[in-house]
Image (cartoon, rainbow, N blue to C red):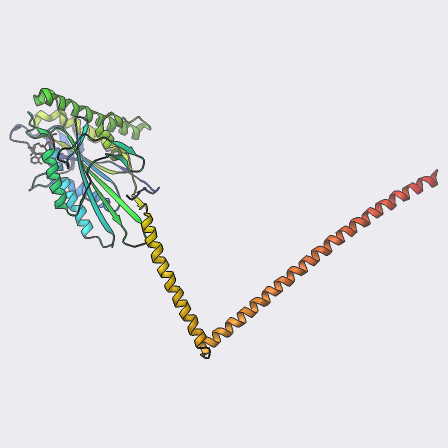
Length: 441
Ligand SMILES: Nc1ncnc2c1ncn2[C@@H]1O[C@H](COP(=O)(O)OP(=O)(O)OP(=O)(O)O)[C@@H](O)[C@H]1O
């Protein structure tokens, strides 16, 4: 398994938010309360925000970010909105109107296909759902409960989650459809096929240089998240298990909303505690909300009068979310080279060395075998002169060294002699003073 560590250089970026308004459904009828005016959303003229037409959401907000995934960047795209506002439609879509998951996968595989480098790509995919605070593997027929673990290098990981190697967008779409058929959905008063779980499709793209001695690996991750819808019990007209599901969905969405609030405050007022640990959903989205990820939130809204409060609420969160900052950095690392790889490298280097030795020996034999040739003669006489000059040089250095030693010895003996003379003068001076004193007396 390659160990991928992101390098130090990080770039701060803000969470991008796009608003997608679905058309009125037959069931809703009535008045359409959302207007779009110069890229601003106007809900009955009281709330302003920016807007993306559904057809342009992908091209304008997502495509360029997805392209970064094959360059080693992480990206997260999640749809946020009330039940029936069009999250699943936006993320999964239909055959005629493909959703963001499908469009993103096509972009990734097209980019890989058109890549001009000789790098080797590997794409893997996993698909999980969080239902009632329990994680299930949607690519496993009968998945057990899975746990979340925080890895210092890889961030949040789900041990035991299937990660399938894929080599075409079609293969992932097949897996996506399989996973969606296993997803928990229910018919509620608001939505006939309401998702009861949060689903996370994760695509991982690893690219490795083809060079045999290089072990550099780049890995980008794309997380596509389809959240379950927030709802009011009175609206969904549900009871029993449905009511419990709804309560759990609301709890995790509330945890998400609290994280968005805290992160928004953090940007404006400095440090604030972000309660990621309050739900599995927020733990999974932690990197997307504040870590190493370019994140895009698609706020889905309904234009129906009956959904007025939900629409305003979603737009308020979208407005706060656009303040959130993340820090992106390329995931470049090295493969932990296996001992056998080193052995192979050593073997090939040894072959290279013995070939070079052989070539050198051949050259030497040629030189000895053709002493009369002028070029060789010149070369040999030049070598002779060089070696003569070198030995003369060495001899001169030895002589100089000897002379230096002799001078140093002479210096020491001179110094000693000087010391003795000083002592003698001092003694004579004492004697002289004594004699002088005696004469005076
Ligand atoms: N852009 C659109 N064009 C046409 N129909 C749409 C569009 N968006 C959503 N719908 C329709 O609206 C209904 C609700 O959409 P969807 O199931 O995607 O909502 P949701 O937000 O995922 O709901 P929940 O949270 O309950 O799962 C569906 O019948 C869907 O086909």
